[in-house]
Amino acid sequence: MNSLSSQTTGLRVWWIGAALLAAAAGCSPRGAGPTTYPDEPIPADITKEHDSFTNTVTAGVPLPPASDSGQWTKMAKAKTFASRPDPFALTASEETYDSEAFAQGMFDQWGLVQAYDPIPEPVLPDVRPEPQPADRRLAGVLIGDSVVAIIEMGNGASPQIVHPGERVPGTEWTVVSIDPEKAILHRDGDRQPHDVTVRLEPRP
Image 1 (spheres, rainbow, N blue to C red):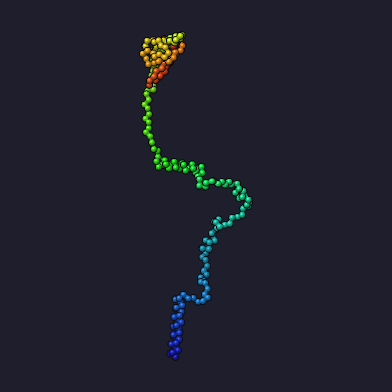
Image 2: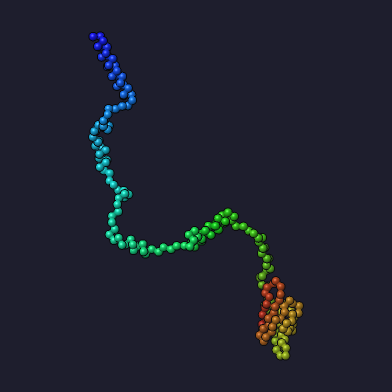
């Protein structure tokens, strides 16, 4: 009796040891199906949010067929396509932009440079005309084989007989011309006026 119980105890211990080794090695019974999870109902608030979603995204939605498929062909034929001999060459507008950008870059880098000394402005003489005597006049004119005039230069000066091309004695004026009505006088220098007209007039 004791030997039988000891054998039974030994078999029980052997089976328990084999089961522990199989569990440690990760063995599972042959023919086991996929893992199943408990079937729990979806909460009502999640179902409500899911039903409120609407599909407003156009991506992936097929386009409806065109009513007139020939219009796309007409639009394509209406377009003009041109090619350039050099595809890397700049167009006219690109060249204009490139030159303007280059000029702007040079100006921003260097600015304005004065490469010469400014020429000082000349000092002009006083150009205000001098007042002329109010009593200057031609007292008489004689036109014959030669032209002669009697001129009074004013300011109490004595009358002088002058011919065209002669300088009036005691003055800086030269007689340019004499006609029956007037004489033209001229002077050089910085003072104004350079030319005056002396008319044939009676004594005041």
